[in-house]
Length: 309
Image 1: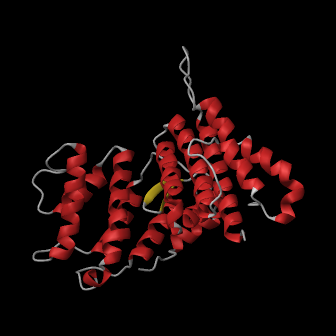
Image 2: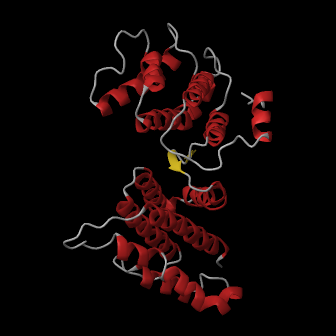
Image 3: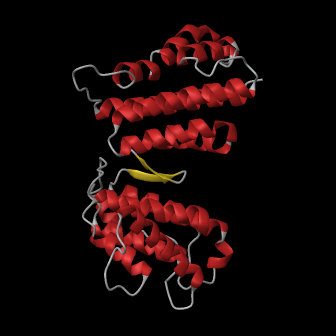
């Protein structure tokens, strides 16, 4: 379903009344209502004898109840849709709001996409899964809420430029190649830790993803390596085997230093070893830097591999 540039919205843009910075905890009521509209346009309206649509809302309700340890999200409700989305509209916890968005759009991205033909005649359906996800991401941007739904996950966004030019391309690169499944899973896990402010765990998964990609490249080209090789050894092997293009050989030393002194060093100093008698904490800006540095390096090595001959 098309989004409309209403007169009031255009005037706000002209006056500069649009968010310059993202925030992550204030899920405005207007945004929540827009999400409900998107869901109904894509899954349909729950109604009597409509097992196709009703079953989806029943599954969403069941999963949330089980995870939250309750029997229902709302007492005295007449439908699973109302139970879930009345709860969503009145929920004070931003994390639970994001839970519902992520779960619902994960189902749209998989179950609805696979059975799109079955939902075409459902009451109220007028939007395809891809359009629904695109609209959700646009609504996030409009509301200044720093998340995007990518690869079945809600990814926290610090910079829209970095996300569109680095994070999104690397998710596409990792997702389309089954040999990179381990690196993809660990990179998404790093984002999940970052979203929940588990910054040490974020650093650990950044390094795991970086190492997993290099190991996958070694396996693809039958280069010898050991499973317990450090990042430094894997980097040296990649460069020795000519993974970096010939025209960059003049920058060989610089590339080596950049890769070796980036993710592994930050992780080892901040999140990789015992902290001793003093409790240490990883600052958010360092986790953000490492996450984006990981994305940059994954994209660089992945693109080098695609052009490798």
